[in-house]
Length: 175
Image 1 (spheres, rainbow, N blue to C red):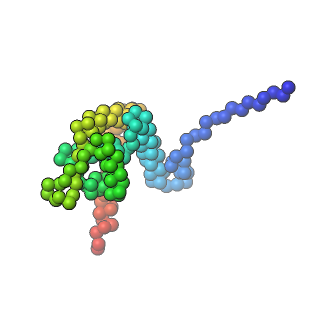
Image 2 (cartoon, rainbow, N blue to C red):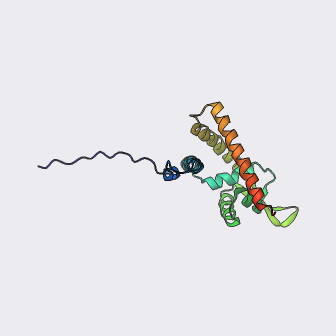
Image 3 (cartoon, rainbow, N blue to C red):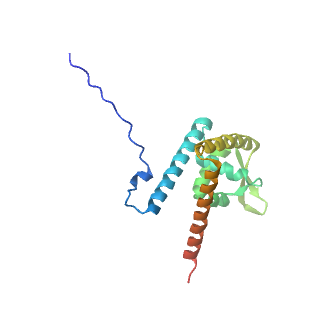
């Protein structure tokens, strides 16, 4: 009787944006790919956690987060701008949340052609539960960094953000 072959399969290293970088690439390119890789990993874990724990999606969570910060509600166009997605995306997400009675559309008193979207009391309760868990997930993902490292990383990224904004502003300004 022939002996069955067994093979040991080693786990392949994770493939992500950073695997495209090589030592001969500029350090800025490698840094960008590392930032992208970290962002993607964090976002994917948050998406998975929201789905498994609350049966919801990140866009729904994000829309509810925007509304939680605006007790008077937001116009659909404001939601679209804040979330940087099309009005059609906002309409679809809002329709679903409205069916579940987590948000309500109300006519804007200043302009009766416009609707404002608000969280309902149940929407506020559900969002608070999700937000508390979300904060724990994010804290856990940064758990290997000490307080000083987190402050340093936040400061460095803050400087980068200011530089990028100034660069974008100067590119928009005609000479």
